[in-house]
Amino acid sequence: MTDQAKVLLIVEDDEGLQRQLKWAYDGYQVICAGDRAQAIQAIRAHEPAVVTLDLGLPPDPDGTGEGFATLAEILRLKPDAKVIVASGHGARESATKAIAMGAYDFYKKPVDIDELGLIVARAFHLHDIEEENRRLENGAAASVLGAIITAAPEMQKVAKTIERVASADVSVMLLGASGTGKELLARAVHEKSGRKGEFIAINCAAIPENLLEAELFGYERGAFTGAVKSNVGKIELAEGGTLFLDEVGDIPLPLQVKLLRFLQERVIERIGGRQPIAVDTRIVCATHQDLDAMIAAGSFREDLYYRLAEIVVKIPSLAERSGDSVLLARHFVTRFGRDLNPGVQSLSPDAIEAIHAHPWPGNVRELENRIKRAVIMADGKSVTAGDLDLQAGVVPSEDALPINLRAAREVADRKAIRQAMSRTDNNISSAAKLLGISRPTLYDLLKQYRLSA
Image (cartoon, rainbow, N blue to C red; front, side):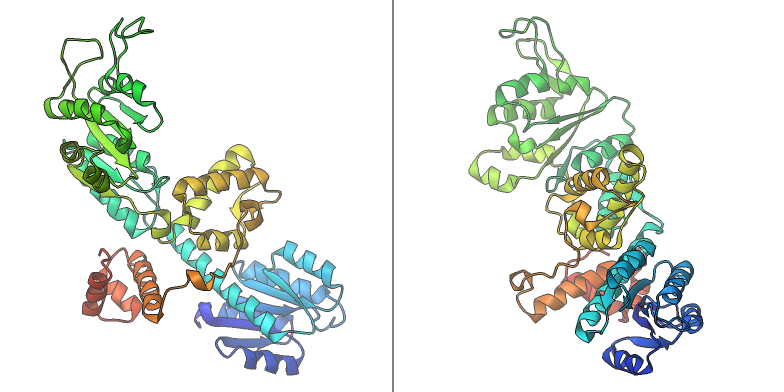
């Protein structure tokens, strides 16, 4: 069988146009067919990724019936094929019907070779993306730590670190941008630790400074106006368990001193209390802030940092997690579709392409929120790029391109190496073979680009 990624089937009864199209697509392995029987034979023999199909085929060259029958049979045999249909007969009605049947795109006759070439190139690109994401979905590890959906080696490395440190009695600091899943990872630390107490989470940035101390340490009756009864703080509530301090960089300096004392002595005093209370609570914290800069500026205590950061885990952004955006999007469509709009079952091709191309500055949280809204708004069975309010196939501006050819090559090298390592479950020999290079060369590239094996 020929390479699926480069096989283009042209179904066209005009032999002159066949030759013209074949000449125009010298970058692909082009197979030509003049009628339905030849087209189906080519589909079975070559399994093309992309098909251009003239709806006016013999014995009905002046109609579209034979063309639509061919389209239906092609999609039945190879549902993932990107079929681009053409007809000069009732173009608008034919386009609507073809797309409804599952065609990828539509163009009018007479053929504009350049315009059709762009459509074909985009169809091949999308087919590659879908093929890669099917591979990721069917891979051995679509999730880690029980709740985190990923197939990216960058995130799997984080998961391995969490599993190793979970059982150790050390404080863990999670560093990552907003929306990268820090609380999920903190909960995983607790669940893997074997601690019998509860997992308690508190967002230090969401509570006013004058109330944060009471939330953390609790207070005795009469400690301040309104304290009509004693209250247990979050540190005590997490006795025997884990306390997750999200946005720990927002804790004010005076309270940092009290937290440091707890970490050093494992005792607390409630506000208004005089009795030290021994507490066995493990601390996991997170922040998106630059704590080194805050320490230099005097707004975060260095001694507290070292108590909190006995183990530091850096969490990659969604853009750095190869293939995970579409993998997560499919997961969210299934989840939200079941609860909010049962008719929605999948992502359309243009949605997959748009999700793959989007940088996701808000990370997993942005993706989750956008998919949730799209599922609610979707009219058909599939979420589209329009439902997501994203554009498919957006070409970056010149300003967004790498600064020079060397930088562009590095970007391409990094992407290819990540994908090869992911495909081979980080097996160096297999990845090198997939990339067509030697093992020593791959080791050199991993070192040069500071990529993990």
